[in-house]
Length: 369
Image (cartoon, rainbow, N blue to C red; front, side):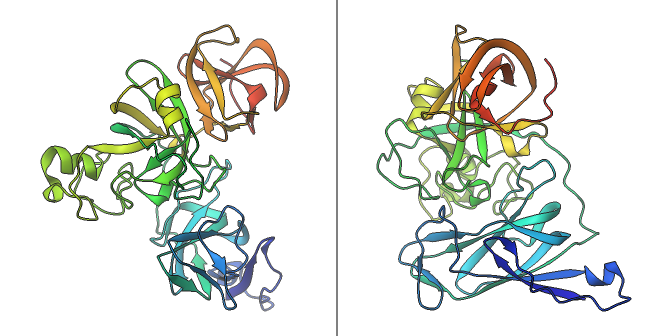
């Protein structure tokens, strides 16, 4: 039997059709349909306004809705939202999110989903509906830790607005990737990159913008949204610049003038990595890394990453506020009082790189170093 519900800010409303007596669980749970109340978008939405009949935008915009708890697991969906692209992501058992996707498939079965409507210029959306189901034929993605060496450029654009609505500040700490699949909502670090330079420094930056060059080039995936004839880990811009791929042009037909696969906010570029010019770096897409994780929570914009478990150790990198860090293990060190309380626990978030847990929230299950 198909179930129908209304997707609300509180989750899933109680308007669910009852299963007839004697029906099997499998028959009752084969499909789930929910309507998205398009005007009830969250504060981290950007570029959209409410109208008498729905939402609209003069420029591009994104409407993000609260997560919905489902009565079944799902890994496939069909969307109907005239005037918008519908992105869906699912919460995994460890609390991490899958990537946003508009292709009707999730990496593995989930029972919590979140919806994002992406509106083009001068668009209006009056209704949106999802049909969700679990497809047992679809394989579950295996845990993977993805790192690639790509060319990094400095974004700059102070005072401008990122794709998720963040206003860019002086020496800001964020990153841009050329696909919305890894775009974190404003103020969130649910998609974070670890970027390491050849000088040994690393930075942790939430992904708050889309670019450079392309907007549908999730080159860290296979298959990817576009350019599937390119090797995994090779940005389309790199292939265009180095090998005249696509006649040397990006998806918009522009001549590609550098091989960039990531843009970095000025603070991440100058302060976190100590770069003085555009450079090749190693990027780890942390949502692809299994294991314990937490989120940086500081009174300011950044957290110093140390070369050991005390504040007198050298600074070897910087993590931006809200950035996600993956925890390799936990060690004892200097007692620190921070936003999360007082603790002597230090977290190793990369080889030879530590932060005090006094400034990291949500860490559970970390092994001892």
